[in-house]
Image 1 (tube, rainbow, N blue to C red):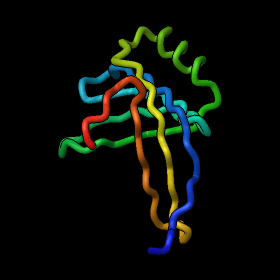
Image 2: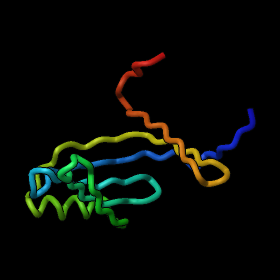
Image 3: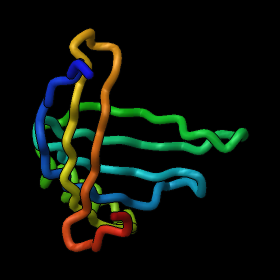
Amino acid sequence: MENNFEKFGGFLFKIVTYKGLEKNQRIRVRDEGYRTVFTIKNIDAKNYDVEYEVIINDFNMMNQMLAQLKLDKNFELHKYREIYRSKNGKTEVIFDNFPGLPHTWR
């Protein structure tokens, strides 16, 4: 079978999530290794996530700012992500690995 995918890269992600100001709201700061993203997620009446995202340039400063607002941190997570993109640019395949967690499939 012909290989129609190219590896875009492998990146170590750092993710910190916070409880939002509203019951159905989550806030996330994510360093993706090649960009850093600030996200606010609201769950709508149909139980779908509505996301508001912006690219930022300082992961640590954003977390410090959220701490100044006294937001409750949910969790911090690290993962390694490999991204492959189709040569025609229409498809992306992602593999996530979580350091320290055992593999559950063989």
